[in-house]
Amino acid sequence: MRRSPELWLILPVFLFMIVFYFYPLISLLSLSFEGPEGFTLSHYATLFQTDLYLRVFLRSIEVSLWVTLFSLLIGYPFAYYAVYSKVKLLLFGVVLISMWLGIIIRSYGWMGVLGDGGLVNYILGLLGRQETSTWLYNEQAVVIGMVHILMPYMILPVYAVMRSIPDNVLKASRSLGASNRYTFFKVYAPLTLPGVLAGSLLVFIQSIGFYITPALIGGRNEVMIAQLMEVQVNDLLNWPFASALATALLIVTVVALLVTSRVVPLKLLWGGR
Amino acid sequence: MLIENRLLKLLFRLFIAGVLLFISAPMLVIMVMSFNEARSLTLPVQGVTTDWYANYFQSSQWMTATVTSLQIGSLTALLTTALATLAAYALTRGTFKGKDIAYVLLITPLVVPTMVLAIAFYFYFSDLGVTGNLFTVVLGHTVITFPIVLVTISSSLQGVSANLERASMSLGASRLTTFFRVVFPLMVPGMVSGALFSFLLSFDELLVPLFLGGVGIVTLPTQIWGMLNFNFDQTISAVSTIIIVVMAFLLVLVQSLTSRTEKKRGQQS
Image (cartoon, rainbow over all chains, first blue to last red):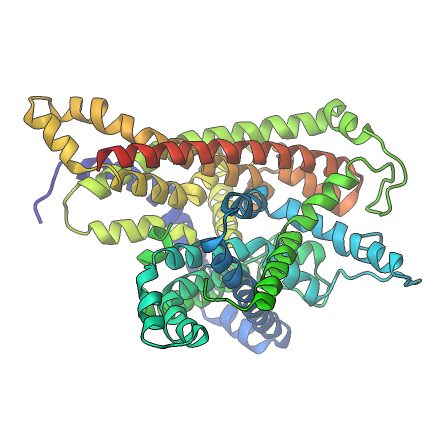
């Protein structure tokens, strides 16, 4: 390819990203290999040999999978409905306001819904239940809150793909004698698969590093990776170990990314909307 | 729609109503709580008051936090949009080796967890001895919000036909004139929505100011975070309600902007 003058425009951008992004990130990752006597893998050994840390890792993956599954189960029908709906603006207005409202405020909102004096207990009280109990500080609360926060990242790519499916495809299927159910599962659903995978990846890679929601409405026993990192940095001042956690977290993310990219072009993720 | 059975259709509608309720319940509860006399999160409402709003507007702590967040958000939006515009133009119009790799590299901050980035910035800036100032937070937020702005501006630029530029240049305009008189005006809607996204993301982001701000820089998220953990009262609900209203307003703004862009595109084709 011939070099065009536009190349010079991107140089300051790369300079900025090298100084303030690539360099800090790579230094962080390389810190995880530093010990008192130079290169070491001891931080990784600690990570894999300590039962607690392994459990936190597996739990984070498990929570993220639940969040991805529920986002799909709720987001897919929602997107499908939105494609044919006459009140599209209302549906997306609610989704987008909630999306841009931010993570802290929405997690806080769930404290108001699930807490001791919250909405759920209030409704149960109206239905005649006497004793109140908190619905917060457990894994279910974290999953509910995270599904609420991340579902828009499922809805948007799935909706984009659904909207691009021509109506004629469905008409063709039905005119050839296929039932609605058959058309949906054998024709429509497979066509939406790229959107589903893109959405699932977006939701999964964001949940795996979640901090605010599990810290606010999760229990002490259901810590996630990012909380572990925060403690290592701020309380235990064990920077190299925090770096090892960061590296491991990044590896999980990259693996998820690579696996998905074998099935759908990654461009769909950022170019889809 | 592929559902014809009446009962199924009704059930589907009920399900969607349930989802809408699920999405809006936390926001509605916050709005109700912000007028509640009780200091803690309790329903039913014990009495209606606007004290929490007064509390917010009269507290110098909350006001400073708000101003700081607005400053960080605007500076981030400016810097990010400037950088992303350069990159988006180079990547959609330029031809050079490694263009695709450049795009992928520039978009990677999107997939790095914010906690990892915040810690990386924290180690980096503490090594340099410059934590506890506003500009490090802006730099961090610029990195975090860069990909989404790049995507927004690139996609709006892809909607602008390159033939317009060729036409302008074949009529004798220089490359520079063409850029400023033809391309740039068409990029403005994309840049405005990109800047808005960047502002919103920065405005909500907790971890970077938490790590880099030290004791000196308190933003709205760090202020809310501090109160949630140590000294709770309903001022948080009042602030949140104000933010919900502002967000709704901004969304209407973005919506009208994007529909205008789409109209412009429609005219071209």
